[in-house]
Image (cartoon, rainbow, N blue to C red; front, top):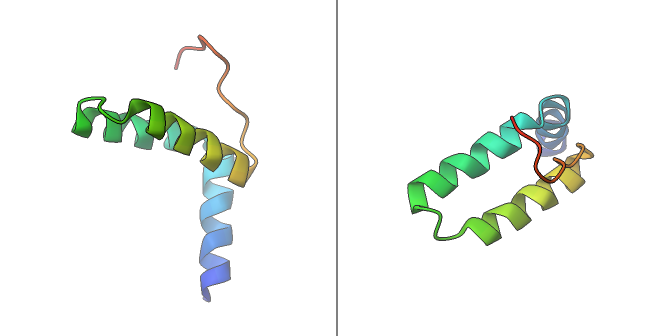
Length: 62
C-alpha cells in the first residue's frame, strides 16, 4: 500500500470515529498538564476539518 492509501485509511477511520481525535487531544492535555490546551484544541479542529468529521458542539458532553 502506498502512502496515499495509508492516509486515506486514516482519514476514513477518523471520520467514522471522530472521538479518536478528542481522545488524542485529551491524552496530550493530560501529558502536558494542559499547558498547550489552546494549541491542542486548534489542532483537533484542523483534524476534524481535514477528515470531514463533525465538530463537537460547544458544551457537548462525551
